[in-house]
Amino acid sequence: RANGARAGAVYTNQCGQAGFVTLRMPFCQARENIVFKHKFIKACFVKMDNIIRQDAASRLYLTDNLEGLMTKVLVTGATGFIGLHCIAQLLAQDYEVVGTIRSVSRKDEVVEAMSKAGLSTDKLSLVEADLTKDAGWDDAVKGCEYVLHVASPFIVGMPKHEDELIVPAVGGVERVLQAAIRAGVKRTVLTSSCAAIDKTHDGKTHYTEADWTDAEHPKTPPYNKSKTLAE
Image (cartoon, rainbow, N blue to C red; front, side):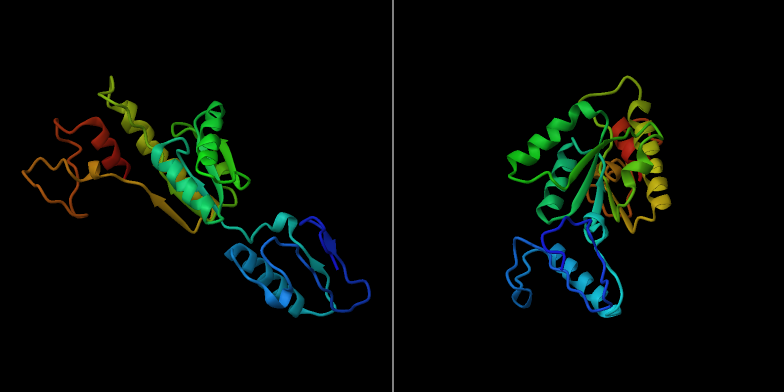
């Protein structure tokens, strides 16, 4: 019996008898009368039961820190308005979250925002990754099952050159997708914008997913171009 031991402890059945592993969880009482308030806890016990039933004489191992039971999600653009809301909802639903920031100096912004929302940051990690650079993306997506690519450059007003928005938007999508493919991510969600459909310059007032902003039109703003080309 490994009772109250750290999650990385190893229990070996020396006598060849069936072993029992008890996890001390704050939301359950007796094993036969468990109230699962979090799907994570339920997953723990389902996995433990499967291990026990495989072979009564086998060794039972607790995976280090219960890795593999908790779904990890990468959220790019952690300091942005949408990125912060995505992280908050994921943490509230007991996901493990990795957020990307352009500079570690902005880490406190994210932590403070989660604290104000009444959320624990125990399952939140923040890593540095830039949309214009290759470094950091493979490490950021490592172990993640899902990716929410929210990051995209935006400024108030007009940039000095449209490439200030287009280059990081397009290059960022390519870097994130390539890293996600290499890591075997199950699904990547790209946050687009109405900016990618509402500059058709043909007099339309109603748009559908079949419409695209004309990125070649001289009157199309740089931000609209960046979101269109990125998608």
